[in-house]
Image (cartoon, rainbow, N blue to C red; front, side, top):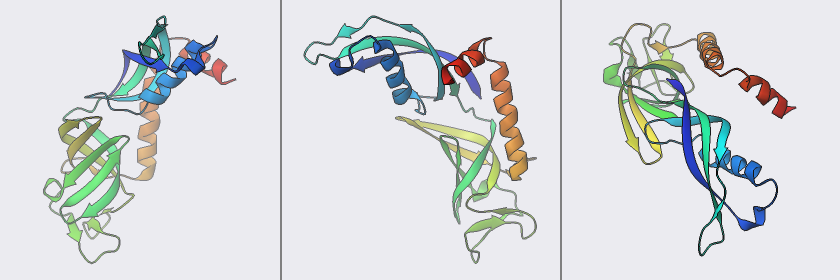
Length: 202
């Protein structure tokens, strides 16, 4: 699930960057360091803006300046029981690995409908019901998260496709779902954010 979250981070800047545009450089470094990273139980997808940049503090012995930056970011926190769309990466007799944005997940063959079986003779490797469902590398799938594990800078999930409306997904359906999610996210933004982003782009 996506959220707008107020966060804080300390950013260091090398003395060679000291000057009039230090705050802009601090923001640029913040985006480079933070976007796309895992912060425990959520991923930081995009930084919308910064609302508080402290005065720089020189770190003894290094000459680096340290700034405390408050910023607003779009974060994604997957939950147990959440249904997400993913793209199949690898398939083996025990199940398949898939990627949902930054989250890597595994679906065991025991968590698939009984009619979907591993086809050892197929190339590439696949799970199929010998009819209209084929799950192979690149296949879009809809997965229900049944377990999450957090490591340093990374999260893993265990998923299931054994249920109504889970499993193989047509690409068109997947695209429409992404558009709907982005629309909901944009509608949650405070007034003026979009116009400011467009002005900066120009």
